[in-house]
Amino acid sequence: MKIFITGINGFIGTHLLRAILAKTDWCVQGFDLRDSNLAEFKDNPRFSMKTGDIFAENEWLEQAVKDNDVILPLAGIARPAYYITHPLWTFELDFEQNLKIVRNCAKYHKRVIFPSTSEVYGMPTENSRVMIEDESTLTLGPIKKSRWIYSCSKQMMDRVIFAFGQEKDLPFSIFRPFNWVGPGLDTFKDAAEHKARSITQFIYDVLYTGEINLVGGGAQKRSFIWVGDGVDGLITIIKNENGKADGEIFNIGNPANHYSIKELALMIVEEMKAYPEFAQAAQKVKMNEVPAAKYYGKNYDDMQDRLPSVKKIKDILGWEPKTTLREAIKLTLDWHASHLEKV
Image (tube, rainbow, N blue to C red; front, side):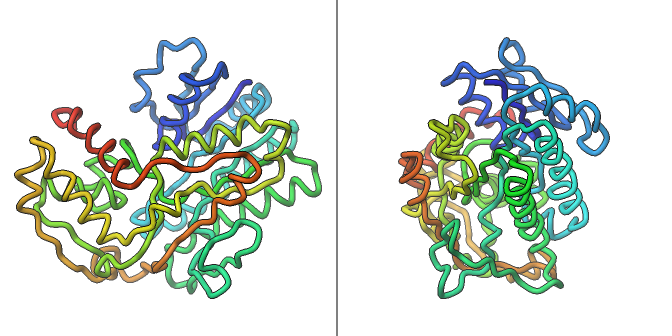
């Protein structure tokens, strides 16, 4: 199988590439603005890479779609700090540029596996406290809260892909990641600018600021999943044995790892105390409650809970998550401990 992945230098892209090369005989062609995370793969004969701007490389991208069997358009903005401050850029990349890729998939009848997001579910209501792919309503916040442009862009792509499947016979699957965590989620540079997601931000804050800021008190609940489990689920979708994933949307999350942001922070600090490299800083760290508007700006909005059902992917494809949140934190800290001098 020949697979084309845009955004391959990102968090999911790098972990997926590593797993594909280790566990399958598939060939991967990658595309991204940079290749800074891909040095370990450069000599692998089953991997090729082109750096470039997705906004400009239209002819090359079309040819890449034509040349491969399965397309994963992973390029996109996926951090609240960015889609709050750069909503137009978020829309242009997450919707317009991915629509370009999907149109080419339809033109050449290539299977597309699209990364949606848990954010499409928006704010839980009585009928969607547990988020179910083909049942839950998708309820978003007001227009003036610009974080929802990310959710809206992804939701519209989901609907367009489904429409292409209905009218143009486009082969597709859609997956919705729920808070994947692990090494490389964000950089410490992102964290220094308060642009990292929670687990990277908290590790950085313990080591370099001595204070963890809990936005809104950290009462928001999320379902965290180890990136290795998530990638295994994604590979199961790509394999598509007996065509079972065709035309389907799958949540990829771990409902057993359902914790508040404050509980996540406390768990990280507790685990860091067991590492000689981190213990002194972890013993001294303080936790502050910060209003969301002060931390992210007035256009921020949030949902208080996010709990996925993974029954569908288990029933259809036989996948389920295995790693506890504490184990995921330890694996992430192991990586940071071994890379401490490099960051």
